[in-house]
Every structure is written in structure tokens, then in C-alpha cells.
Image (cartoon, rainbow, N blue to C red; front, top):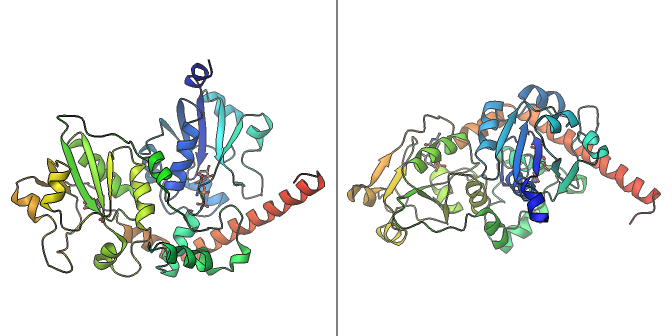
Length: 370
Ligand code: CTP
Ligand code: C5P
């Protein structure tokens, strides 16, 4: 009976989904699990600028990124900032789902007060350790503390990561970022967990896929169209750093794994793929075709080898034109150009959240709640 009921439930989520990351994807995964059909409303650039400050991605880019998340069934463009009952009814949604942090308008009004009052609001757990705010912080501060180094990374992260070099005592309880701790459970939740079927044509691509963006998305869509099962090889942090330099990658290997796994075109991910696509790797995964998009290919930093020399020799290498010029560096440039606006935006958001948290604690004390 319960299962029958769940089959008909339509769930609504909304947000900015700027620089969409695996924290957003994880909230959508949890929301989808509460029903059968998930509709996601995405706000316009104008609305976000008014309430929060300018987004990094344009609305067209944000709509496209959300559409490609594997738990999303439908995207509503230009959804209102304050979620209304009319919106839920218009799309025939039973309730609205949001992470357990607060979202406020420019005037400090809870954007979910209407659906909360109507009992049509449910909360899922926000993913600790990842936020747009923190990613922007990494770019501006040019830090490398996020590189994956196991225990050492965790210790460093606890002391000094993220938000704009502010004092950690002034962190928001919701978005003030602690270090993300990767677990096998998270990977299982994000993964398809499927093997290729007999006769499937297997496609392999590799790269950094740092700050997973619309260029990656257009490329992966084309790569998937080359076969039935798409494997994405992700280079380790030191390998990416060896060819990108500075503080790249901005997202560490574990974070990149989840971002790529959340994409609906991806069937499987190799966690720490070799830079040179080897015969072993190709035979192990029974790869039919290896593809690369429209970015330059650098020779191996140690041996000078062509990364795609072997698939080329085997006659199974193909260039794909993603027709998209976006790169991770361009995103970082956008942020650096608007540095002041982002710093103000992030500080404002954090202060608003701290104030809301204090008010919440006070009212809980007054009501005698623990
Ligand atoms: N979300 C989450 N875990 C995160 C980040 C976001 O569960 N680490 C959820 C939010 O709770 C919300 C949805 O993703 O339900 C959309 O969030 P959005 O409106 O885009 O804002 P934030 O991502 O919270 O903004 P920021 O990262 O700048 O703090
Ligand atoms: O640069 P990175 O290693 O993240 O790229 C991963 C893959 O995505 C590469 O094959 C690259 O050519 C492709 N890509 C693309 N179009 C873009 C950005 C990346 O085809 N705009």
C-alpha cells in the first residue's frame, strides 16, 4: 500500500543551483527517494541577483546542469524565489523538499514559510563539507588544502579550509564548511551499480572534470551517444596539478568522482585513471572507443608519451566537438573578475544564517526544547 502511494507522489525542489555540485545532487537524490517524480524549479539570474548577489553561471547554464542530474525528471525555468502553494499546485506536486539549512529573501523572510505553514514541506540532510561558497573561497585564496591526502587533509581542513579566510568561529552552522569526508556509501548511492550488458558498445573518456561544468556536460552527452556504456576516467589530484599547475584541481578526486557520477550520461567512473590510456586498461574494461573533446592534449609530463597513442594505434580513437568553449579556468576567471561581489555575497549569506541560527536557538530555549 505504502509503495503504491509513493508511486504517485510528485516532489518539488527549488533553488539557485549555481555552480551545481554533488551537494545539490545529493539533495535531489534524497528528494527523489521521497516520491516517484521529481520537478526542480530553478531561479532566474535576476531573482538571484536581487536576493543573494550575482550567480556565477547564467540561467541557461544552470537549467542545463540541473536537467543532466540523474534523479531529475523535469526542470521548471524561472521558478519564484519564495515557494508558493500555487506553484506546487500548478505542477501537481504533493510537497516541497529542501536541505536542512535556511534560505532567506533579501528582506530576511524564510523562502519556505508558505509551504511550511501549509504542511507541504519536507527536509533532507544537507551534505556537509561542500558549498558554492567554499568552492569560491578555494579559487580566490588559491589554496591547495583540499587536495586529497587522507588524514593529513582532514587535519588541515579542520583548521583552516574555506570561507574567504574568515575566522572559523564566525562560521554559519549550515553552510560554514567542514571538510567533506568521502565514504563508500556515498559512492554506492550515486553510482548506477550496473555492469555493461553483453554486446554493449563501451566508450571511455578521461580527464580532470574539475568544477564539473556545461562544457563537460555537452562533451559527455556526445560521448555517450557513441555507445551504450560510458566510463569516465578521473586523473588523480597530483596528475591534474602536473598539467594544470597553480592550485588545480579546485575539487579533489573524491569530490570530482561524485560530481561526475551524478551526471545521467555516465555509467561508471575510474577513480584515479592513468594519464596514458594503456592497453591494460582498454582490455580490462573491453573498451570499444576512446574519445577526447575540444581541449588541447598535453604529452605525459614524465615520459612525453601521447596519452591516446595506444587507442590511436588500435584505430579506436575519436575527437568529439562539444561545441562548447567553457573551461574550468574560465569559471575561475569569472569569479576573480567579480571577486568583491562574491566576497560580499558570501559574507552576507553567512551573517544572515548565523543570526537565524541564534534566533532559532533562543526560541528553542524559550519553548523548553533541547
Ligand atoms: N544543498 C545541500 N547540500 C549542500 C548544498 C546545497 O543539500 N552542501 C541543497 C540546499 O539545501 C537546497 C538545494 O541544495 O535544498 C539548492 O540549494 P541552493 O538554493 O542552490 O543554495 P546553496 O547551494 O545552499 O548555496 P551556497 O552553496 O552558495 O551556500
Ligand atoms: O579539461 P578536462 O580534463 O576536465 O576535460 C575532460 C574532457 O572534456 C576532455 O575530453 C575535454 O576535451 C572535454 N571538454 C570538451 N569541451 C569543453 C571542456 C572539456 O569537450 N568545453
